[in-house]
Length: 328
Image (cartoon, rainbow, N blue to C red; front, side, top):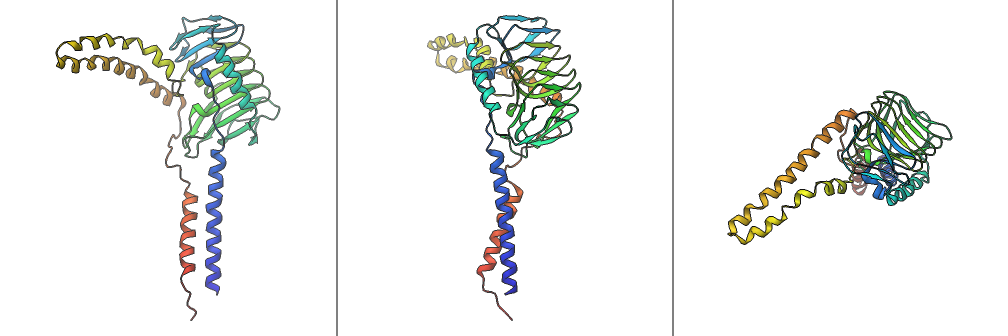
């Protein structure tokens, strides 16, 4: 009798472990990403009066402003995509939808000072204060590549010089969002991760690296010798449209009227532009790893070890309970 009670207790304990692990996994997966629509192809987006750059800022995707049309400082700034001046109403409308979505998410916890914290995916609100980052904020992906972090700044967002945001156990800059009710200012030499959705303006001081986007609904965006790495977030169609002119070798399909062997060799030239495009895209992932200094980016198996242990113990306990217990 005593043995059977022990087995029942063991099965119950294992069941609690498995259930808790599954509930934790479900809660983490229940936070969907924020859809950006057509705004996803932009590294920088502003409202009015202008986008102003000083120095050799490097931006790998599109730059746009609406309803104003003033974009200043390119060159010397370099834009890998297209500059849109006053012609992107749809992108601004999609930005508004994304902003309202992020602002309306239910809050996981309140944090105004982010420096030194390690946070798993969730929604974090500044609680009416300035959202401040001094030092390092660590985002823990918990081996779930779909982890999403949403930060709600009920006032402004300010990061200190040389501050940084890093990942451990996976995570993606594409799933980090900063909804700012006022304006955002990133300190010089800082490394920032995610998409800023600001109601008013965004200012990047000297030498900031952003793995993500700076999207301002109503105000301006100011840049100084900064670097944007946005290509990891799948807004690839913009790059494809930029690279598409090389596909004009399609006329080479007409020479297929010549001997059939020539037709088989013609695809080779068309592969060359694709290879060239791949070479231009290849350096960017290297820059991403270097700029962010990630302590760990392992995504591993999403299965929770606790859940596996709990299920295994439950199974063993049930098997033992089904066997007749002999009392000596």
